[in-house]
Image (cartoon, rainbow, N blue to C red; front, side, top):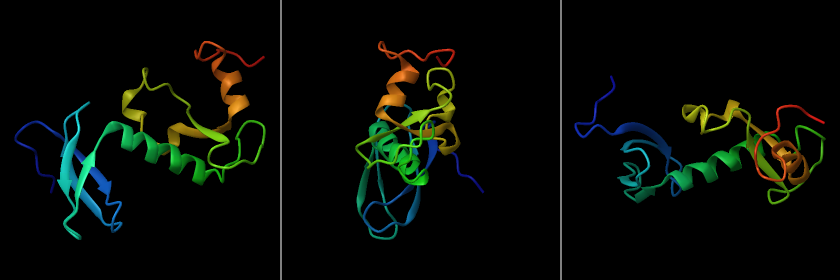
Length: 123
């Protein structure tokens, strides 16, 4: 049974960086929150930046640091996570692992172009 937050915050499932336990807290969009892990008692500050870092790390690890476009095998710093569906178009898919692929820096730059916009067609 899901409990609604009286302040209108959205449910948030997270993993404690200290003990690895799953916790349920609430977040208000575009603001940070603090929750307490019920297993270890640690205060956890949640920010959208923290979530994006975890998303990027999980995408790169899932794809074994291999560019899904050219096959380049790199390290975490040599590859980048890319949203298949742009976040500005579908914000609810921002942290969805199925909306991410790993690309090398060169392929990511080619896909976005020099100005950062996504190209419609591959050249």
